[in-house]
Image 1: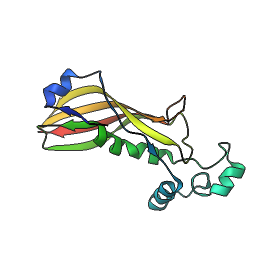
Image 2: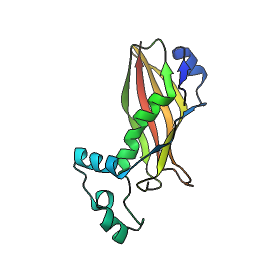
Image 3: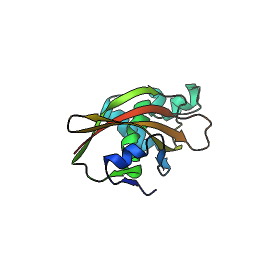
Image 4: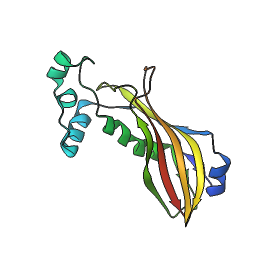
Length: 153
């Protein structure tokens, strides 16, 4: 996926309401899930104990941490969004985060971005993205969230 390039803030404003990009699919393998569990301390068996998850989980095997799925928005955004004329872009937060469907380990996911709003703030703008993490072959998304970034000029 080639990133959508904004030539500046006014270009972004003009695209409010438009789909900006869809990332490439990436697989989420058990090694990534285990590493995330180690780093965050979330060692819940449904994520990291493959054999037990196969036996006891209602999903038939281990599932990806919701927060791991959510954290992939950073990677997907870098694939999809590029802006000129900005000195600094920072993550400001998230709104309305939901995990409608679990991601089974071994599945492939991708991010989809719609530009929701561009509002002035001191020194720049606050940009709200309507984001969806999709599961390949799935009928429901893994994650939906408003991602809020700030661009300083």
